[in-house]
Amino acid sequence: MVMRNVLPDGLDPTIASGLGDNLVDAWRTVGPPLNRYPGGRVLFVGGVLPDGGSIGLYACAYAVGLGARDVVFVSHDEGLAQKAALFGARTATVENGGYPDAGLFDITVDTSGLRDGLAHAVRSTGPAGTCTCTAGAVHRGADTPLPVYDMYMRSVTLSTGWVPTRSLMAEPLALLNAGLFDPRAIATEASFADAEAALAQPFTKLILVREPGQCL
Image 1 (cartoon, helix red, strand yellow):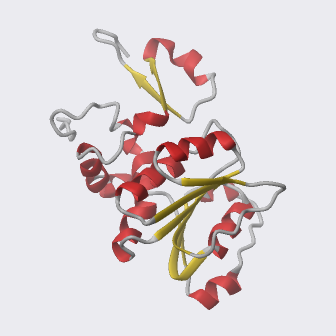
Image 2 (tube, helix red, strand yellow):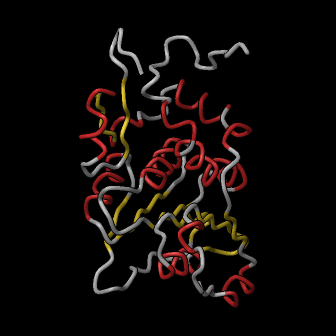
């Protein structure tokens, strides 16, 4: 079988290294919705640990780059909030267990893996808005309540599910190739030779790079 290189000429492979999952998952949360609501307000609900959250952070970068008029990232973790600010988002942290009320948004995204985080994202979704949960797998076996009445009254659409990466890859790849943002801003790079040590350390996104002549 012949494998075809799908990367555009001149694009650094480390920039595109997350296209197999995170970069595409992030794009699907805001790309199609912003086509429906050009310049819309976007809220991201992040997680609680500094060693995670790349999907929400990348999605912030897409939203800012695609022209959302207001992009807000809220998380329990100050480190994640600071990284979201690198991509141009307004940030807030959860204090005393309470999510800050920033009003209603055209688009909301829950990447937190927390039942309260998902509920906050849904409640913050405005009329006919869309809410995407990228962390649905975390709720496996759990009884996760939803504010269904709020969804009903505002005609909210909630979407979750494993992202069909290959079928959605073309547009986020084109945006990265055009320089919309550099995903390496939040990444840690390491050689394959140092993979074991790198994986043992906290990271938001780890990119393993093969050195010239290095065998895998």
